[in-house]
Amino acid sequence: MHTEIPEITLNDGVTLPVIGLGTYRLNGNAGANAINSAIDLGYRLIDTAYNYENEGTVGEAVRRSSVPRENLKITSKLPGRYQSYDKAITAIQESLFRAGLHYYDLYLIHWPNPKQDNYVDAWQALIDAKKWGLIRSIGVCNFLPEHMERLEKETGVIPSINQIELHPFFNQEQQRKWHHEHNVKTESWSPLAKANTVFQNETINKIANHHHKTISQIILRWHYQLGAISIPKSASPKRQLENISIFDFALNETEMGAISELTHPDGRTNDQDPATYEEF
Image (spheres, rainbow, N blue to C red):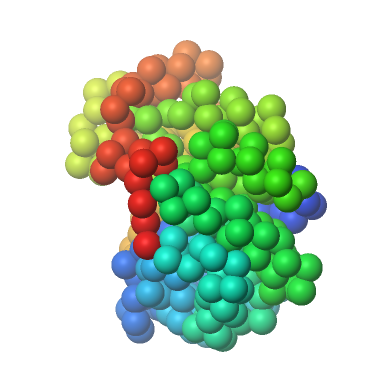
């Protein structure tokens, strides 16, 4: 069974599916099998990172797949410890070597690490790696508007995408508004929040029952209607299929608003504030 997933176009012309597969902690042979299962079901966007230590697993899944490499969109991310220009160039090359790939479709700076103040150098490395054909599109994760404004001011290049924590308990309304105004696409990590909490939420349960859909499907449909790309993680083929089966119904304005109103000012899952959080 294969499901077609709609695509959106980034500000540099690269297209991405509106739902991808998160791969954190999908490692080794079991991880490769899980990723390959997702590809067979219709996933074309696969998200990994240098710090996930599974770029090799993702590359192996790509090689095992019957889907041609050029039909897949593979994302990886630069860790904070390699944000100086020279280290970033080497890390990008190492990412590709680990995966056994010739290029990444999307490469992101994982966190701004503002105390270190190297993210502009790292961004210049991504710009150059794109010129050399190692990357098709370049973006960031967890960057605040002030960080992206500085990137554009100092390099002339604005990110194509910003991958941020986004879920019903932390809807990032102002951040998303800035993205929309500056033609930066929003990508949601941890789109389902903490499953044991969100699955017990009365508001979402009521909407799910009305549409005869699962909690996950309702939340992922909410992301889709917000205009955000979501990357839910699952190793289960049943859940993988469930997560992309969201294009045969729609949430109305009242339902969208009710889910968005679940947000909290302190709704981050692990209190990782990009203004202060450091990732290496």
